[in-house]
Image 1 (cartoon, helix red, strand yellow):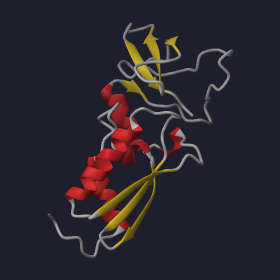
Image 2: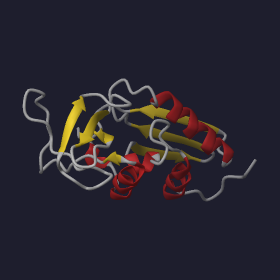
Image 3: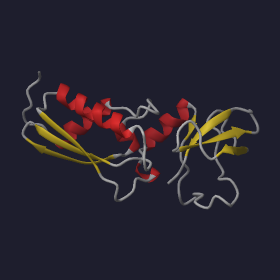
Image 4: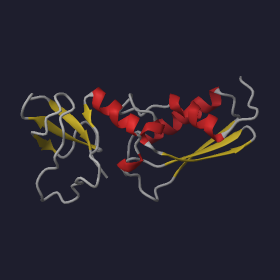
Length: 167
C-alpha cells in the first residue's frame, strides 16, 4: 500500500480522474462536475458528490469506485457523501467533458442561455447531431439509454443519438 504524505486537495482531484461514469465511461466524475467538495485529515479523505439526476442508479457504483481508487492510493479511511442541494446542473460539466460526449456520439447539453426546454408541452429543443453537425433533428423519446438522456434522430444523416438533457 502506498504511503500518504503531503497530499493536497488538488492531488486528490487528480486521482479522481480515474473514476468514470459507469453509464458514460468516456466521462470522468470531474468532467461531469459532480465532485462538490474534498476534505482531508491525514490518511482520511471525504469526497462529497452531487448526482446528475435524482435517483441516478449509477451513484452507488460511482461512490464505490471513488472509495476503491482512493484506497489504492493509500488512504486508510475514505468517506463518500451525497449533497443534493444545490441540484446538479449541466453548467457544471467541463467543456472537455462536453467534447468527449460529442466524440462518443452523444449530443452534449445545450448552453442554457440558448434554450433549455423545461416545458414538455412546447416544441422540441434544437439539438445538434453529434455525427454530422446538422441542427435538423427531432426528438423520438423523452428518455434515451438512461433517464438523463433523450433519444433524438437526425433528419439529414438519419442516425439516432442520445442527447444529454440540459438541467
